[in-house]
Image (cartoon, rainbow, N blue to C red; front, side, top):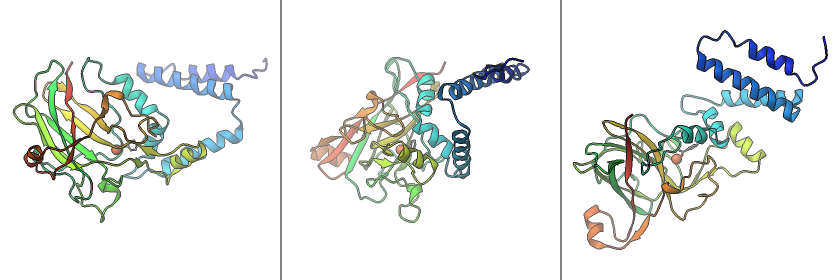
Length: 289
Ligand code: BEZ
Ligand code: FE
């Protein structure tokens, strides 16, 4: 037997071992994974010690996961993989709202709220109105569309990060668009915040000299009958970290002006003190395929 210093033999054997995989997509994914992993080790001349460190890192990442914390998703986020997958399978109808990552702070059961309600239950931040319309890509309004909203407070914390400090449901709401597809609610202007850094992913950020911050944003999931739901955020224009989001989730079309508004009659209409900040943003859904 000839020597095989570059390991091509073990690569072919490992690929060959997958040939009987019944599910063709699983076979395709595993075959490509083995080839890319082996090429990675060859290209970098990965050492035994480095491989052991990588295994220890992945083990710690798994051990950091709990019912309320998903360190593997966070790892995928900071490596840009979550955003890449999102981009590959996002919406491509011209004019439809672009999608971005879901993130770990969404609750499957947001508190149901009335249009115009204030989701800032604490009232500490800069008053702000968010309003817009849910419509189909051809412009047709979507009455009764569901608009699920969640955001950090003006200090950069989600309610679930501060139990006992923030009331449950602070910064969250599930709204139903009116007969013309319109939605509006009151809140405070969110602040940028760091993703969790007390686990292995935080160590990775420190080792690579990266900051952990996300630019200020409000999350949305909009859904309506006959349409594909969109998971997205709006980002506060002019804020910090828009060009260095720790999870690479900023898309230009999602950066929105939270305009300083000095209009006493509009303030009265929305029930906010004048002046206030106002973000106007339409959620445009693709018809379901
Ligand atoms: C978020 O925006 O909630 C988020 C997204 C990815 C990682 C951490 C937080
Ligand atoms: Fe967030």
